[in-house]
Length: 465
Ligand code: SF4
Ligand code: SF4
Ligand code: SF4
Image 1 (tube, rainbow, N blue to C red):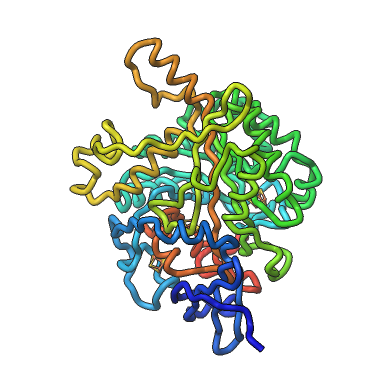
Image 2 (image 1 turned 90 degrees about the vertical axis):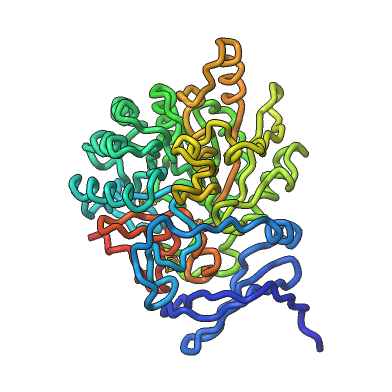
């Protein structure tokens, strides 16, 4: 009897979820699903769904791969990917957004947490943060900095840290937070804003407490609303960041988008993160525990009353296309979405006053900057900051008002599919542009940094206590 038809979409390398040994892998389509199929000589075969939807897979496959060499190589190629981070000479993209884990402590103990954070842990000393920032600036140039952890707001000196990031010359600082403290203490967020914070990257898993009880261990919806209220008062843009877990909150995707519309212009974007299984997670995942990017796009399309089409979303352009999607929309007066894609300009890097141009070279090529990374940074800074931020044209009051009005009605919908030990595709990882900075000058691609085996053992992340 014939088995199901298997279509090969090429070979890559991955790791064994049990021992993290690097092993060959193949992308295969069976029916409408693409799987990563690999066999560890010691621990056997693992087949994991990575993309459910061949139509979008075809479109994403045809998008351009914009690779670039690292600005600085910090490690030698020795053991092979993913054990030489980094960045090593084999990496194929530069740093765009770089995380600094300022603490491993947290005021929550979520059942699902890739940092495995809890109430105990350590703070990175402020002089080590300064060293890390210096090394980052010297090695990677102008990057976006995300203060992360653990939960950064457990630190009373966070405003000092934000000011330090600014003083070291970084243009964009965002805070990755569960929102509890900034909601409870608006003055704390105001102090962060005064110190130069641009954006709050807010853990926001749904619009019902049932979701928060399952994913975060307690009722938190009211706390999330308070956090957004504080951000409104402080004039800081908010990105809602739902971790999507099948059977827990995937049926709230539309409700999260509706909530975001109601909180515009403070809420600037929704950035979905399909759950990935690293760090603290209850058990080894089954196929039905995964939601893939095309399923998120489909949920958004179905909820939009015909106003969003697949063509309104684009693959990642600086990162590997299969890492993400994004789309920008304007909300019309009746509350419906109208696609509002970024203009593609023939000018310098798509922007007459582009960041790279400001550095004195068109597209940053003379200074070794990747034009796609510079473009991604401009997009994030333009869309994720407050609509009232200073990134506005100054050509007359009417133009300024129209600009503000337009900015205030724009919402970005995007997602990134982090890779765990089951789904890791080293072709994707080598093009990663989201990195974690270490004080010794290493920048470790995010999915390598968080990679853990079945027993929670990590290649790079240090234990939190
Ligand atoms: S992920 Fe990049 S930096 Fe890390 S080992 Fe692979 S190629 Fe090198
Ligand atoms: S997921 Fe975030 S909020 Fe939850 S324990 Fe981990 S660091 Fe804390
Ligand atoms: S963090 Fe992971 S999913 Fe995101 S760009 Fe890097 S490799 Fe891709």
